[in-house]
Image 1 (cartoon, chains in turn brown, orange, cyan):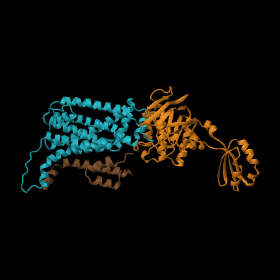
Image 2 (spheres, chains in turn purple, blue, red; image 1 turned 60 degrees about the vertical axis):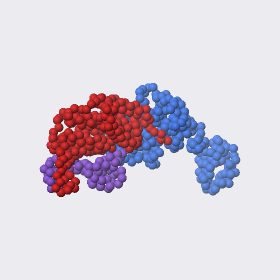
Image 3 (cartoon, one colour; image 1 turned 90 degrees about the vertical axis):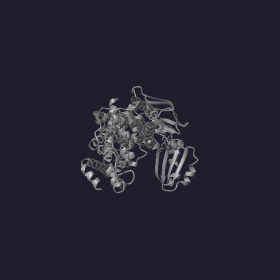
Length: 69
Length: 300
Length: 263
């Protein structure tokens, strides 16, 4: 594990943008989810999906969870 | 001069005629009702007029004075209007206006005007998804009117509303009547009687009765008496029920509705009847039946 | 006429801004783009840590070339990227039809040509921008971690792949306009793209003309700066097909009735 950690630390500047983008995706999805009173399916499940499924979770929410009417 | 005329308009789905040989003529400046039960073909007829459905047979002619795509001159409110919920009411109406060809500036002015007319000025910055059913109906009317169409077509504009919303829309329609021609469909006779000048009654895809409201009323309304007494009227009623001037009687406890052939004969006969006076008269009223009886007969 | 097109286009644009498509699609493509160089670079380390190799075993994998990494990135775009694009845009017309919002638009004096092309240009704009920014991320990370690929190879390969995306999104719009079910739109367009790619892979001689050849042409451009045999045939054919599909879609959409049988 040490080697990988070390390798990652060396290129921290390259890893950081990925994490930041993931965080942006998650935060925007969460804000949108809370702002809407109604989602397709229970809201709390969507919150879990957004928070715990990396990248895919927010996408799933935007595609299927948002109610667009 | 009629605004829009159809000749032998027919729409078939899988060989079944949803609209069958309908010829109607909408007069400019009038409010016309298309009256009939659900499934009579009213929506299909209206959709053909707007161009959303193509007729299987028959022609539609719009007044030659208003040239070009007839959609330019028509404003339409579907029975269940569906809006882009992410727009605000103001954005939606203004979007509709610009689609109809109004300049941005004109669209904005007209939008403001329409939103105040339908009473949505306060809520114009709210998202449409948050609007109530009545508000959506009023927004629908605003978007139908915003490009100042020659003919406004409203499909069952009041049927989905509660009594208050219904009242509001009917009052609004009365106001609109002064500025533009209206064609609306309804399955409620009372609504048609309240606002329309002309009535077409549809059943199973066909127009079965048509004419001006007053003409129809003259033709089909019958003089009637409403009588209320303190004592029961059963015996007295059976004694007079055979009289030639009575058409129909309907007794509801101590309230009697008598439809008669001729008002004067009937009034004389009734008021001279000593038996009636003994029942202690509470109310004696001369009136007319509504078109209800006709409508019920036709619809059955 | 142009003015109305603008109004319709602005509506599409605003809608995508409000439902965050303009945010999340580019972000997804950037993530897809940079993932490939990152995982290629750390591949050996990752295997050593998690691969469960016996103690002391030495892993000797030659590091991939820059062109290989970029080709792999396009592979990601063709799979996950296309799936995401379809999910985002399968409802562009079909959704309005199933919801009924199109009625009050098309009852206005709106030309169906404007209605469809405004949507077409809009979905192309988002898809291509997302691709460009994601691909730029891939190129940048590849240059930092692996090696630089000649600029001309990158640009020409990327442009060819952009044409493949354009073809694919045209297909999505076409199916969305003609079919009401978004699920069928998604399966139909992904299935067609997959079929075209597979056929091009196994019978390249028969499929010279096919737009499905474009992604392998773009990969070849990364490697050598030269596209394969029949490159211009497939490029030309793709342009013709795109135009043909659009004309057909508009024609069929005009012929179809806007409102269904309700009563």
